[in-house]
Length: 258
Length: 72
Picture 1: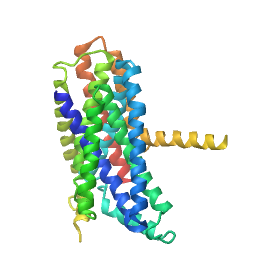
Picture 2 (picture 1 turned 90 degrees about the horizontal axis):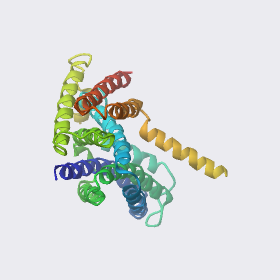
Picture 3 (picture 1 turned 135 degrees about the horizontal axis):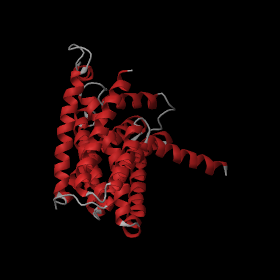
């Protein structure tokens, strides 16, 4: 039960982060090249991702030995989780610029406006391609997380439902606030999901290797606590390593400028 | 044939970028964690301490290295 809740939260959080990034590109393509092509591109990519989950996930569960699956999936989660955590710590401590959706939106719009004439209400190959590529690339990471967490715990349906709910939520909220995607606390979300992915990764590697964690599923909570503590300490330590007091959190300050 | 080759190269490049890309530490760190977990599988009391600690060390070291790269 504990792992099911954490699994749903991890997939939901990861999907929210990726959905925000994908939505930025879809909105940019829609406003510059026409909504019809952008929405068709996004829908085609979503369909392809759903087919991927079904085509890869179901055979994974049925034909690959569970312990092999858990070690491989644990490794994959660890790669994703460590990458997300590292990037989030660097961003939170001011060593790396925050992911600015407004900036990405503005850049994409500028590139698209520089292209061929917008075709009005008709179909537009560039708008379709940008939306398709954005959703497919960001969605691939979600598919991997859904497959990893879902297949290793035999809860593919729950993982897919959590990802679908996140995509729906971000789409509805995203279109309502359209140009304020920067308000989404993306780095905090990424940090939380990074902790969960890393904890699940370590947990499944252990289970798949053949040693049982004390407390079974509850060990995931202990691992999460451990990673949260070390992440918090790392952020503090990294902040203290910024060159001067004036230079502290330059990227955060730059974002607050008008 | 040329199209197939191009597709395979693009597929390989995508996964290389996706898994290794700008942060090879995470990929190779995960391999080390898996290796150590498999080696210690018969010694549960050691494994449950060493495997999480090793992961923490990899995270901290990778972040520290990332700081150097970000400031360059």
